[in-house]
Image (cartoon, rainbow, N blue to C red; front, side, top):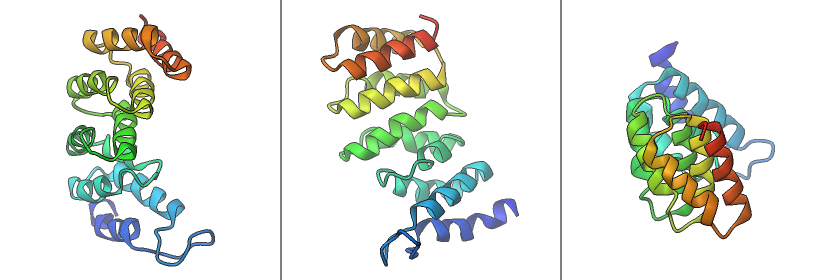
Length: 167
């Protein structure tokens, strides 16, 4: 159905449904994840505001779905400034799957490595290893985190990202 399916998928994504393990009035996570994944595959920019509104709700594929379109990547870049830590974490990870705007994504990931949240640092380092775009500023930021971060798992993630980038 392609683009014609977008309105129905957006409704599935945003309307509360009672699933087997979902309390009344909440979105069924499995169904929402499937709808987000299909919306990402379709790549219609009309879905971007709805997907962006789902960031921070721990739907695994929303940030990856956003990363499939230039408008979605822009939404992820904007979400890195959100006051909600969960939104920033998901946005950082989603940038690892960016299909467009690689230069903006790598610059944003380098900035995210200095976020106030260790979860954002961790996801930014992970995203850098997935994206595999060896921007010099990103590599320098990863090297600093790998060397100086106070948390071992964040240092390891940054070191892994550097290995993935061939540095």
